[in-house]
Length: 389
Image (cartoon, rainbow, N blue to C red; front, side, top):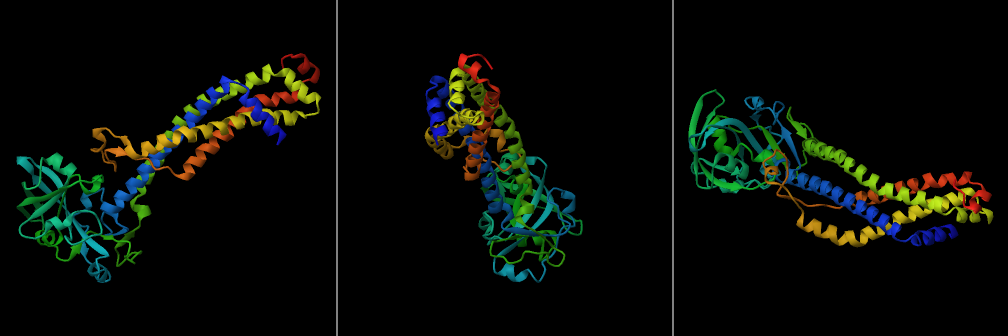
């Protein structure tokens, strides 16, 4: 306890140098917490949006269906298994039929994906109820698709598709609504139709490509050859993207910590060389070299603790404000194939805050120990005379 009090007193008596180091360390701490908050917030928001708009609580897919390979769509459909029919009737499972098509917005040709969904479903946020009543061919599009094709609610667009017998047909569809979502995989290049209408158009009665589950659906395994995909599988791409961002953020942390810890190292080194007589006095009074080393190491550790405390004082209101306003994203970010909105809103995880705090404190203790360890080799006589180590 005496060493702790002495180290804290010596630290505060060092003057402006200490407060300069505290400022740098506290800035580094707050920056690390803010950056981790952005990544954590992005991950949480992306997962929520994916579950809300596309994956639900899980999916059951046709074994040949690959959402990244349009060439699989021709054969990726089959009749609804009888084991799943009760869950569809209970509205804990909704089928989706997927096929290729070509649209002709404003006389231009554009390849699109037609997706049929039950207008009465409530499992995902697709506003499928706008497809009712089913008089004529109606379609829903997302804002990305609407922007690309130059469509808006009330417009009509010609659609040409091929049925299961490879016969081509074409009809004019009314754009019943334009929905806004951050998930490009339910928006870009896609037209959402009434499920029964699409089944009639393609000659695929009672068929589907995949099923979306609600949390209440008990089916968590393969069914009659259809493959069950849980959220870990469906959200793996997002998790890999976030992990990549965390690796890139480590580069920023290295530069910030290098600057902050260099200041601490310089301060501790200067302190060791300027306080030779004090060190000699400590040793002459019976303090062992190990305890003297511990004294200087504790000074650096107390410095980091004070920096963390100061960081909490000025960083808490700043980070709270940042969580409210978010970090605006450039316009082209929404056009990328990434689940991202107009702004990223941080989410501060306790584990991230504690990790940043422990990292700064431990590295500060290590940096303080390096110059202090030379004290063990100091001669008492030379130290009392003020000679350099």
